[in-house]
Image 1 (spheres, rainbow, N blue to C red):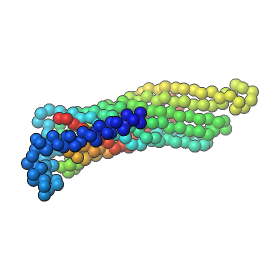
Image 2: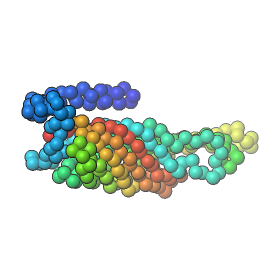
Image 3: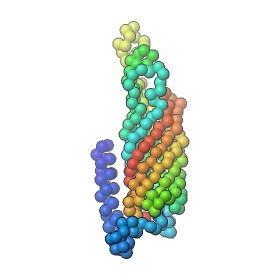
Image 4: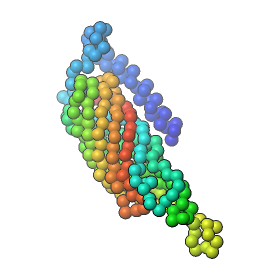
Amino acid sequence: MKHSKLLIAYCLMALAPLTQADWVVRNPLPVVIGANNPNAGYGDPINDFSQGPKLYAGVSAGYSKQGDICNDPFFSGTCSNGDLNWKVMAGARFSPMFGAEVSYNDMGESSMSGTQNGNPATMRNEVKSINLAGMGYMPVTPQIEAFGKAGVSFWKRDSERTTPDTTTTIPNSKFITEQTNDNGQSPLLGVGAQYRMSPNIHLRAEWEHMFNVGSDSNYETDVDNYSLGLTYSTL
């Protein structure tokens, strides 16, 4: 998985100069003017929608936090409720103001190790999701725009919990490992901003909040995702 992430990032970085070179060939005048003005060529609207929707794809990585995992009042020990995350995304902008996006998200895992009700116990869970969201955009400068999103997250959570077998006569002599696989849907909200590096490349920073992941199961929690990534559009 680590190598696949590096490959995705490398491909996007390799495509960026090719995209800029193609734009220079098709738009020589702003480049000539830009010899003395580094912002030349970026005064036009952020996107041209005269030929229909703008399609894009991208990757991002950051940090996820499962905020309520460590709030068990009967647990004592160490708890980690955050992990590295990554996602791949694709979307369409139907106008300068509105669009839609789908993404696959790997939010890592949380873990606990200590005692629960005085008995040794460990727990971990791993969360993944497919998110569908409507997007709204607002220009801030010719190169920067803010955006918000609202939609639904289709999540999958794999959990593993180890506790002592209370049916034995010798305390803590045998342990039971329980594995559960939960699926569900939760509301999704998010905000962010993106910087126009070229007509085709945007640098994006965002925060997403997923509600009630693991609902109707042990350790229900909200999840916050913070990420930084790149999007690429060929149109």
